[in-house]
Image 1: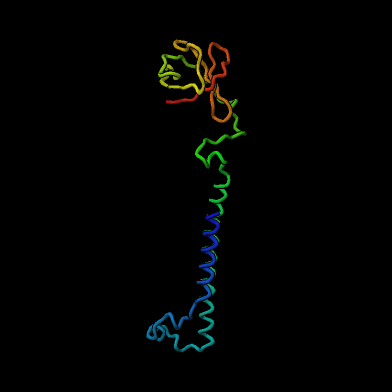
Image 2 (image 1 turned 180 degrees about the vertical axis):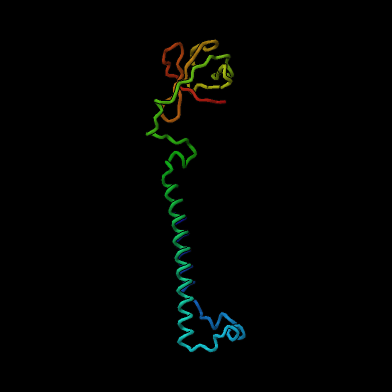
Length: 168
């Protein structure tokens, strides 16, 4: 919304600026006007020249305004596409993602790290988001992908439905 307001303010500012062209006589000194040979032109010819300059600047301003408003519109559209979760710094949950095709991780637990965290033989450290009531040390486990970028723990071939997250 702020960006659209900025685009509107920019458009209004540029639109008022384009109507205030004072004429070629007032933007050049008398010496520059004579050296350019413009003093030999009639008032009608100078009016045509002023009209051409005004038209050129109007086109340039309209092009610039259109370009800036397109950029602002694109960034506003990208901002709108962000979900409410992303606006608060939470991870995106893509309900269309194909999490079932992600491979499961099979590894052996080497030891416990802290109260509810365990270390795998590949160096990764995982933590249960809920209490892990199984003894995992020395066991081969599988970590299965779940929707929304989450994971669950499988011990001894049984789905324990314990949700876990990777710490390291």
